[in-house]
Amino acid sequence: MTASAAARPGGGRRPWLKPAVFAGALAPLGLILWQAGRGELGANPVAEALNRLGLTALVCLLASLACTPLRETLGWTWPIALRRMLGLFAFFYACLHFGTYAVLDQGLHARAILADVTKRKFIFVGFSAFVLLIPLAATSTAAAVRRLGFPRWKRLHRLAYAAGILGAIHFWLRVKKDVREPAIYAAVLAVLLLVRVVVFARERARRRAAAALSAPGA
Image (tube, rainbow, N blue to C red; front, side, top):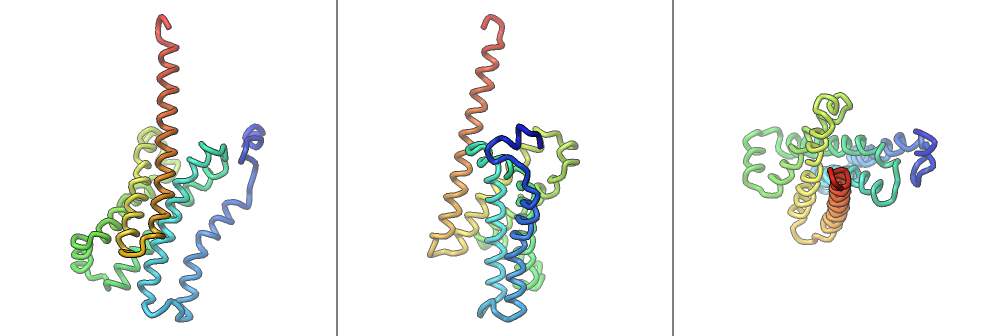
């Protein structure tokens, strides 16, 4: 990081930040495993683990989506260094969420899983969100950016917002009655989307103004 970057709001070196976020992101899984080992996950431990793993996946995904808006609105540069890690943790917990459902809840019965995905709306929506995360995780490396080219890679990774929307809808449909908690996550996602739309419109207007100034006869 350059001296000018360190001087910007939210800049500066934070060597502890990534290890702290990494440990914090693993804490929910550690707690689930600890409570499962002690028989403290309630009357339906599989359902409890499913709910917690899915919620953690959504939280990590929203946190990764918040990194760029924080830079654009507050000038913080440090969240960008966490964006890839948080996105991969979202995929990690989504894999655990789906794996717990497929193995512990459905016993790897392919027909039962397929029937659930095709007939139960909230499972179809959640599975769709999981599928969208797969290409994002697979192209999260610097080599993938070089191979795809940054513009194409950037367009592909906008799918993270679609995955976030589907994840919030999955949560909403899952709780059925008391939707206050999923409504909070949906509102956070809506704010993040609004910030990105405003930033996109501002950048587009800036490009058009620059093109107009550079045009012959301007």
